Length: 360
Image 1: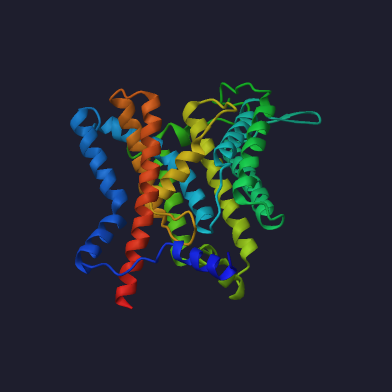
Image 2 (image 1 turned 90 degrees about the horizontal axis):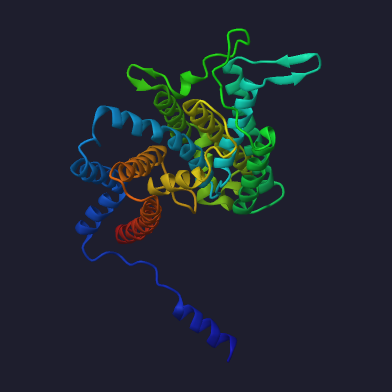
């Protein structure tokens, strides 16, 4: 068989690019529906669970569900920055657990120094916890950029490293009481995870602040434009003078900070720190980003979409629990939602490409 024949066969076997749609008006309507699919799914979920359970739309349950969403949304916002550059971060759940153990250890046992033990205020502990997340994120970024490790492998390895360090901090044990004492000056950790302001949990207010800041960064700053540029076409970004490695390291640092903050919020809510905090939360975070329209190939996505995706995942999970669905079936449903999100995202891109071809 000749090389020419092989090439011809390969060309014939290749999938043809999407052609222009036959009915442009119908295609535009379908594209609009696909773009708003996250909102549509959220509304349908609320209608369905409200019809099945009278407790679903009560004020107390809505507040509880939104509080659960806040932690996943903060995680997902950080992951979105990484995915926008074409990367992935599988370590965010473990970073959250590590920050939880660092914060819990500082509050419960303090920091041993020559001559005694030092206890920090809650504000300082939170800052230290977030800095730990930033450090781990920076290591991820360096592995990806300087050592050319694939993001999947680098963050998968860090998933185990961070979780292992979290277990080493307490030798696998738990820091059970983080209330603090007046003598140590470390009281008030419960504020961020338990208390409310104007009837809304503080964790939700923190989510709103983080989301607003992320929206401004991605839409109004040169850094945000460079993040999209790196994910859209890394080679073109390099040729245009963008320092791609710095951008990649920065997004992993952002992801680490968001993960650490989420871990501290979860620890505050539980009132105790344990090494397995936020186990598998990275899957929910990635699912929220993808469901919200962030393309895994990079270059496309919005923070608002990610937050809405987090609401879909959270409201779905809590709704299934409320109506008594088995945890095994909950996993099946979540997996189906993720597959649905990826399939519809691909359908949106094909339809948009077809419309663009017709316009051109």
